[in-house]
Length: 251
Ligand SMILES: NC(=O)c1ccc[n+]([C@@H]2O[C@H](COP(=O)([O-])OP(=O)(O)OC[C@H]3O[C@@H](n4cnc5c(N)ncnc54)[C@H](O)[C@@H]3O)[C@@H](O)[C@H]2O)c1
Image (tube, rainbow, N blue to C red; front, side, top):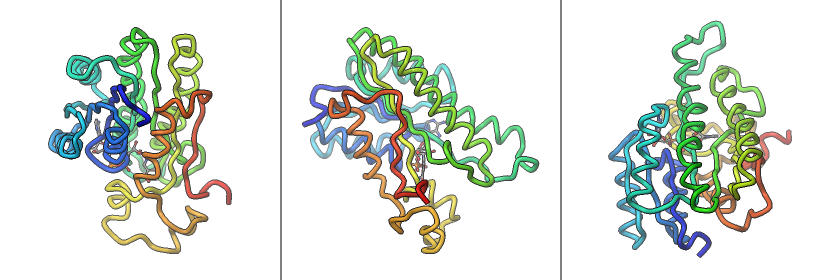
């Protein structure tokens, strides 16, 4: 098993890619802190892990709130032990609006969760991770941090910020044996994607525009990349954005 003896904190673990990653990490031997603003959803993920014979705790936290970020790390350390892996995955799509129509509050909310939340997760996990001798941090960015998406000024800015902050964190903490990478998914079929489509089925023409493979990605296909980055399989990778986008950005 690739994560035997490791403790992994995963934010946004109540749904989508966070839940898929929590389940995969547990199957690979990690003890998992399933963190989410939606306590019921986090508990469901932790229960699924325990039903499969794994070890997990559910923690409610809003990653954009500093006291919550501090408490989620403290609780995870108390319940599981020193953190070896952090997947800073929680995020929201926010409102889609052209810049002149986007409210400053809507802009701030996306930045608070998708960028500040990633900063706070790293800020509070790094001290115990460094004390434990190192680890792997994975931040959830997006292709939207690399290419323009109409209506996504706040979202794209936050995700580009995550890519930039990942490089800084990798540079600062390499000396402490901490690797920091980020994932840039393309269109992945999750609750977020369904909300963006307002519940409609994926339109095959629209899907072909964002994927040369002609389909949406599955959450498990991102979980597999997170596992690679969490494990020693990626021991020479740090500071890098890992694109998993069905070829969105090649065409
Ligand atoms: N779905 C896509 O196509 C796609 C593409 C690229 C990147 N992403 C990113 O991947 C991540 C996961 O998205 P998903 O598609 O699995 O979405 P999702 O909506 O299925 O899951 C997101 C989870 O994050 C939780 N969450 C939201 N705000 C939170 C907060 N403030 N504190 C703690 N938890 C919070 C939600 O309750 C939910 O359980 C996000 O960062 C998203 O921006 C998604």
